Length: 290
Image 1 (cartoon, rainbow, N blue to C red):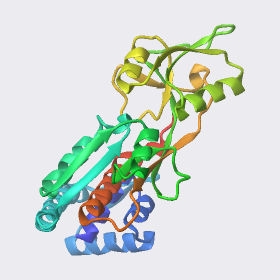
Image 2: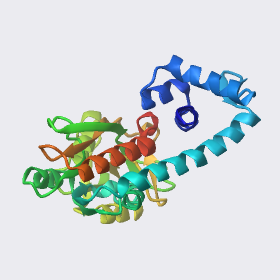
Image 3: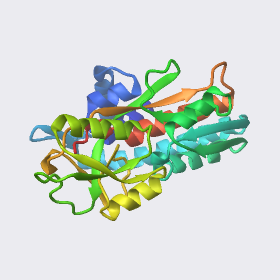
Image 4: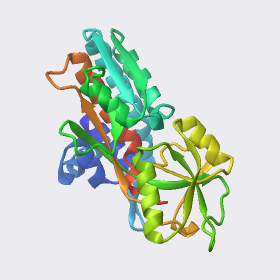
């Protein structure tokens, strides 16, 4: 089972070294797993294709079965363990992830742990952490709060400029750049406007909102470009960057924050599930370019 899990990780992450890092083994140990698996099957699983290593026909067949076997194995484990875990967990997350991979991950968690009730609150990062500090939430997913003592980093996401799909020229000589922005305080707003100031690009807040839905709508309507992570963008929008005349932006840390004290079994399981799902879905985010 461990060898199959390593095989799936190699294909998902695009390389043996990345898979080894993710599953907590050395590259030589994972390589040995693959050689042992090949001996057991009597067929090579990988072949050279130029500088790349790709699956053989046998490897492709084994990979397809491996995913199904692991899903069934994990479902069996969760079915047994999940029935013994109960309680309530109050979980807060920003709107950036409320309509993408995270709701599906929470749905999977609920099936695995049917006796655990998860109360979800979607609010801006700052308000979520204020609620955590007041004891109103048990677990918070937040961005740009890596300096807190309770921060457990999941990924570093690149900030990116975002405009309507099909955007061409953005920065024009002697023109003022229209921006769609969150109301202050907002670290995306601060990072974007600071980058424009350093580049000597004039800007104005043409569309200001407190809602992610309305922010996306304003950008899609051409009222201004904005700055976010670029994760799970609506199809009406696109990433912009240096080719559009826009300055580079920093990255932003995505962290989990748990309430102080010994976590309940329900909180510990939810925390682990969110961490695994985040690293699976956002594992390549830090390597994406604008």
